[in-house]
Structure formats: C-alpha cells, structure tokens
Amino acid sequence: MTMLRCGPHALDLTRPRVMGILNVTPDSFSDGGRYFDRERALDHARRMLADGADLIDVGGESTRPGAVAVDEADELARVIPVVDELAREGALVSVDTMKPAVMRAAVAAGAAMINDVSALRLPGALEAAASTGAAVCLMHMQGEPRTMQDAPRYADVAAEVRDCLVERAQACEAVGIARDRIVIDPGFGFGKTLAHNLALLRALPELVSTGYPVLAGLSRKSALGAITGRPAGERLAASLAAALAAVDRGVQIVRVHDVRETVDALKVWSAVQGAR
Image 1 (spheres, rainbow, N blue to C red):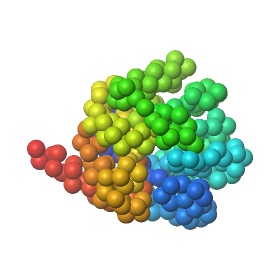
Image 2: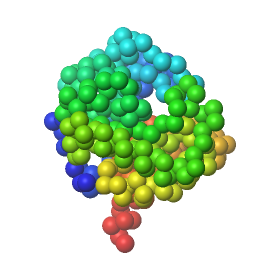
Image 3: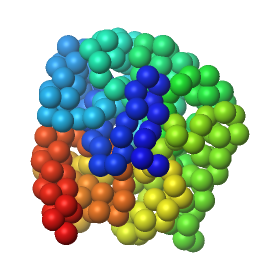
Image 4: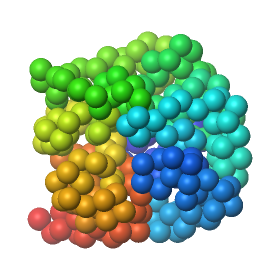
C-alpha cells in the first residue's frame, strides 16, 4: 500500500515516515513529566514538526511496563486540548489510547489516527474506530502493561505476532474500516524479551508481506538498553540504528522521540538507496 488514508489527510508511504512521540503524562518511561504541561507539550510538538515529523502521536496514559491505568476523565483532560490545538494548526495528529470514549473525542477534536496498543480489543473500541474516518494502528501486546514483562512466552514469536495482527486487521475490515486505513505494529517491548524483540526485528519482512503498512516503535526501548548498557536518555545512537534496521526491512513508519536526528538518518539512508 502506498497511501494511508487518515481522515482528511492522505499519508504517502512511498518513503519512510516519522511519527513524533508526545507523552502528556507524568510517568512515561523516557520523558514522563517533561511535557505534562500543556504549553510545553505544544511547543515540543511544534518543534518536532519543524524538525520533519510527519505526524504527532499524543498519549495521555503511560503504557510502560508496570504502568497503572488512568481514569478516562483524566486522560481526556490531558489529551483533547493538545490534539485540538495541533489539529487546528494543520498537523496530522494520532491519539495513543485504548479507550473508546477517548478515541471518539480525539477524532472529534481533529485526530486523524487512532494508535491502540491493545489493537482495538476493549469493548466498543472497534465500533468507535469504525465510526470515524481515522486511520487505525493496531499493536501487538502480550498481556497488559502492568504485567506484560513478567514472563512473556512464544513458540514462534514472529508467526504468532503476524497472525494476531492479521486477525485484528481482518476484524477491523469486518466492521467497515477500509484496508487503506489500517497500520500494524509488532509492539516491540510489549510482552517481549530481548530475544523476542530481536527475532521480530529480523522478521519484519514477514509483517510487511501481509500488505498492511507497518509501524515500528523502537525508540529508547529497554531492549536497546540491554544491548548497549545505556540508560533511556543515552540511547540515541541505538535508536537510530534500530530505526534504520526497521526501515531497511520495509517498515513505512517509525515512531520516535528524537525526530530531527531520525529524519537526518533517513535522508542519508534514502540517498544511499537511490544510489544503488
């Protein structure tokens, strides 16, 4: 698929795209609290857009390992004003949420994509997404954020993640979400060990071969810390290497904290590809 339909926007996927992460939370794993203030969040989003982000992913509930659920009213209060302002300024905005009510409110405020770590499994989520014209990103997660890293197990992680995501994509199509609105995400770090994450990264072409656009979120993840020995704030080089490895295997969207550096790295990668 070369074009992703996101509400009033159309995202050309003939080149890799960059999704900038905007956590309006007090407790996200890498930048929790840094952009909890609304004006700081908006300033950061504008900076990411100026640095070349193609879309901004706004999340009001941390999904780090061990995270606890956020009340719906609190999540709405965190997310909706930021989505509304960014959309008014013309940005392509994604909302990172599992809650149907937040999905509906965010799209009404201008969000053009729903990014759900539970792949629209919560009651009413499929119907909420289907009632909008927004794109949906379906992520694989074994378990739930609070317990997902306790003891993840797979017989064949690549095959199981692929089959699960295809099943969820087909469930979306069955309720009227068109194929050109669907993205899949293997969920690096969500109920996976380091070995599982590396196996998934190597197997990304299998996900790409499904025909659905693939998003990869590897930025600053603990797996990169396990490999390099670096804390979250010192994983830029590792994050760039992981993003390029994903794109080189066919991923169309990378979800990142460090937009400017990722955009520059992709420019070099693209120039090299064009020279082949």
